[in-house]
Image (cartoon, helix red, strand yellow):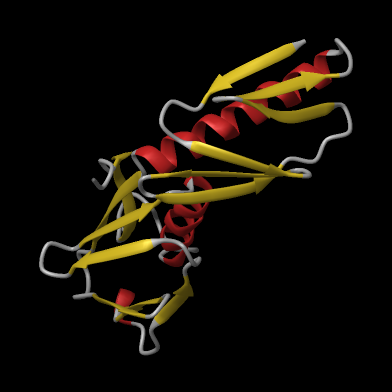
Length: 179
């Protein structure tokens, strides 16, 4: 079985099992290492070839296809997530220092809650509107950043219907390509 993926404006480079895709927003690379699924670049297409017709191999090939399509979309348009900080009990302050995000006075706690966000992710804070914007070319890095921020405000031992303070994902979409 053979699956062709058109690059449509992006450029690709394959070195062994590592695929690099670059576009107007930057580049994304990923290692595709499966014994029965092989990658090759033929002209303007990335081609996936399978050494069998077993369901497990087909599923892996289609998973690889989804990853490659996300990489192409990331370098052409980018991924953007909008999060909102919600609080009702104590006034909360958020700060960014390098790649470290800190949340102060969450539920009246004396020590701030801190989390280290992955490299390759751009974070914009709108403190007055209590909004956080995350942009990245790599969907996995953006998703990791969102997850870390949501889990930073996880509450244990309180009724979630009453204590709804936290950081929540509001919207996800794309960033237009830089020209």
